[in-house]
Amino acid sequence: MLERIKNIQGRFVEIELSLSNPDISKQLDKMQTLGKEHAALRPIIDLGKKYGTAIKDLNDAQQMVKEGDQDIVAFAKDQISELSQQLTELESELTLALLPKDPNDRKNVIIEIRAGTGGDEAGLFAADLYRMYFRYAQIKGWKIDILSGNQTGIGSIKEIVFLIKGESVYSSMKHEGGTHRVQRVPLTESSGRIHTSAATVVVMPEAEEVEVDIKAEDIKIDIFHSSGHGGQNVQKVATAIRITHKSSGIVVVCSDERSQFQNKEKAMAVLRARILAMETEKHEREIALERKSQVGSGDRSGRVRTYNFPQNRVTDHRINLTLHGLDEILDGAINDFVVGLQDEERNIKLNNLEK
Image 1 (cartoon, rainbow, N blue to C red):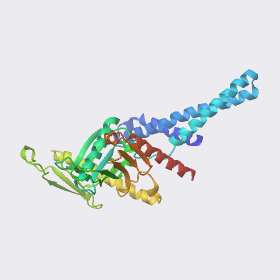
Image 2 (image 1 turned 60 degrees about the horizontal axis):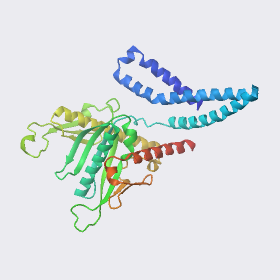
Image 3 (image 1 turned 90 degrees about the vertical axis):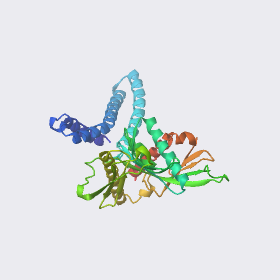
Image 4 (image 1 turned 45 degrees about the horizontal axis):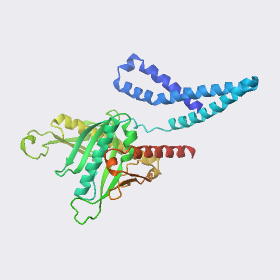
């Protein structure tokens, strides 16, 4: 552990020297990358200093036991007991801090919610999920920007794509991907029969332009009139954008903005995120055959959570966590699920280290 801390301290010094270099300061992308790495290493550096100090103090106390008089020996033994406990706690903290990091954890996220099986009820549930994430983002102090959406007049959502910006959003939201299932009696159901419907959630880290190189010849851009509900708000100018990525077949449509430029920017952001997610998934399949057993694979076919209205409970099937108070959960109170899934991810990493 001391050797790993020493290597990290060396890298930390290198970064600080680079950040103070006038030539580097002119390269914005480089400065941002180094700044993020510097911030990620800082907690380890601080823990490493405390750990080093505790080891030195423990060695000094053990030496006092060997050489000191009776009063000093009694004091030193108390110190040894206290410092041993402190070292055990610091070693545990450092073990977690030194676990392999997901390089995307500090990023913003792009989330796609789509109504699944269940007709109008699935669309209403998709709208519930969007509101749940919107409220959770508000609680966390994050910002939301809708990139595209397909909504109906009854308050249901066929599909919505939105960006959440904030500190380390992906680390909190990445495990939300999958199939979310709802069990409730629809308003239109006169017999009181419980219906089961579903919506899929896809969570992708926002991709920066330097991470995904999309050449102009790789894409096809179509411009068209966005659909409206009539009246004065119908677009008189073609501003909606459809971008097709030729090699992957990914198609992105954005029509929410009145500006063609803004729609294109948003569509490109979604396209970059989808390509990055596709490449990441391919890489993970190649290096992790046990992917299915891991939390947060983003597999849309996997049922991750059930929202049961008659029993007022929500169950996350990956960690067998059931919470009551469904209305509060749909109002953004999902932090217990978020923390539970993060803990499970850390446990998986710890188990992999021990193997």
